[in-house]
Amino acid sequence: MHNTEYRNLLYFNASCTPPMPILVGEINKAGWNVKLAEDVPSAQNALLKHSPRVAIAQFDDSNGRLPAPIENFFRNVDQVEWVALIPKNAMNNHHIKQIISESFYDFHTLPPETDKLLVTLGHAEGMACMKRDNRVTGQLLPNEDEMVGASPQMLDLFKNIRKVASVDAPVLITGESGTGKELAALALHERSTRHHKPFVAVNCGSLPSGLIQSELFGHEKGAFTGASQRKIGRIETAAGGTIFLDEIGDLPLELQVNLLRFLQEKTIERLGSTEKIHVDVRVLAATHIDLEAAVKDGKFREDLYYRLNVLKIKTPALRDREGDIEVLAKYFFDKFFYEKRRNVKGFSPSALQIMNHYAWPGNVRELISRVRRAMVMCERRLITPEDLDLDRRNGERQITTLESARSSAEMEAIRNALHKNNNNLTLASRMLGVSRATLYRLMEKYDLMPKI
Image (cartoon, rainbow, N blue to C red; front, side, top):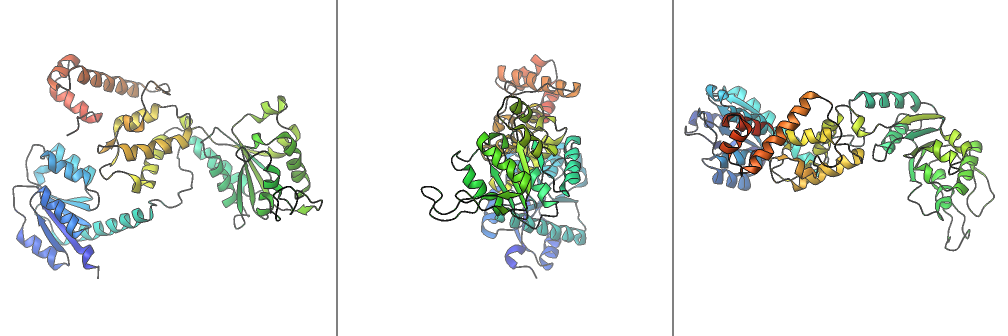
């Protein structure tokens, strides 16, 4: 039997027709403690006082819009799963359909079949429990370190990872900063025969030059001033597993020879010692620079380059991943759901459009940063380009389809007309040469409706 605290149910009457006493009685008999609310303030009080996980909203057959306070209430309350009760002809009402599709778990037509409604309420409660548990832990999605994407470029990457994961040869991972080179390295390790052993990541560019040798190979007590005890290096720590050397291009030339010797002999010497220690470890390296050019410029050893570049994998830039931008944006929205403002439900069409046209110089790392910022800063139901701090004057890439070009031009023309006419729809529609109804429809399409 469920805890009675979690069996409270809010019945919010958003219509002129009173709730059906027989239906309320049947819901009570099934173990729900029904709390009736006739207006938004009483519904808000019930949510605060009784903390229901499921709520019913009853609608009438009106052909107009719902009052703004009720619309905002449904869009801003996400601590319960809503189930709608509607007259059959209410499905002809565009605004009712929009509210239900955006904010409701399910709906039933009036009069509902009690048994089916009770099943829906049970499912809704289960979904609410699942969401609450996940938000408390701060993790909505499992395997949060997995690479996400279904573009041809990512499918090729996944295929290449599977190909080289099972062998022990060194792998050089190339790609721009922020494309997930460490995730690719971790995926290689987890799919290898060494997955039960350590995965040790070292960023060669972040270590002070005077400490790199000690960090990689370790040191003995007294090897230098301040070395008060023996230190095991990162390579030795990864014994039996995988060492990932990120930004290998930043490794100083004088230390490149030590790494080369390790790759050739599979032995290391701790700083301050002459003892050779055999270490069985697989080496993965990554860089965002052109190592071949670095070799030609004398900044990277040619022999080390060929030792590292036995197998090669390239992580694609985000701008080249066809169709993945929207998938990733929604993935990270769900992953960081616990950080968002309560009213934020997702991305507006204009935000998705501009994200698809943006060049993403910082790649996935930049996408994560902008999405998390927008989730906190957004004051509306849907995230806008402004929340993402994106506009078409900075970093835009060329629009590749006629449809997207038309949409972009249409949205920009509507924005300009509204701005020039102080949001007067009559004057703006005249300027654009369309009817007021058409302008209203287009404003809804591009999420350009003024805040209520």
